[in-house]
Image (cartoon, rainbow, N blue to C red; front, side, top):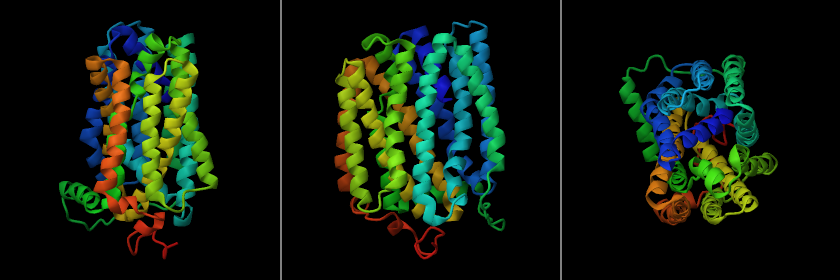
Length: 392
């Protein structure tokens, strides 16, 4: 999807020349994720997450095949693209909670923080290569990009089934209804200020400050760098994030994790403002790299806090709530950016988003004092948890 997302964004903006159309892409992807994330989290607590991820990858394969058909038939309507994005959002709605709940079952507790950082670094390297390759592939022909995405989804569907680690230990005697179990996950998050604060901070910061959905506008109309430049712009945040993730694998954040997370989100907002004001391609790349580095620190700490604070029996449902918040910040944030850009212009929309992120940091520091004062990751682990210090 990282390769083909660049092509989809470029195609949608090329067909419509409307930032609002780019925002609709985020909205269409968000709707199925919003509807499916919580039920999918309940499924991830009852079934092997590996199988859920594999089935979702097969659905992504179908989406890639439809995109390939779209370009081979030289379709010029934007509506089929929205239909495929809806299908991809459905796949992500099922796979998101399962993917986020799987890692603690693959590694021992003492290795979880470093494993999170290592996994993030691998993901970020993929995000670097994916958009860059997507931009180059589009210059050669979008069919190449969609064909490679199709093959990658098939490989993922098979490979995930062979992952080792311990299996989910679900209680088959639970009599609670599925709706009640979903509600348990929501109530668990709401009752833990550290978890609720960390997830909601990411939601509103990225919802306001995310500029990724508007990058096709910058590439075509502001920086004038074409699809190849768009690929580099999409890769810049991932480059900053990957370098940071590699550093975190060697030097994980061990003390003052709460203050560090808030500082990182503030830097993310400041970098967004610089990018919004820039008309120089090099400065724009640097600003996006800074936002990616700051976001990686925030994501790393948030993910670790959520994993440490969640017992095994609740991981799927809590991951579902986290997925819902993340999809709202990314996809719904893309819609917000498109609407704001259509109303006020692209550059003012990005600058206002960065300012809004800084405001969110100030508000959340006052609203969640416990999160602001967290020192070590393990401090939030409940007694008896598989990730609590005594369990390690």
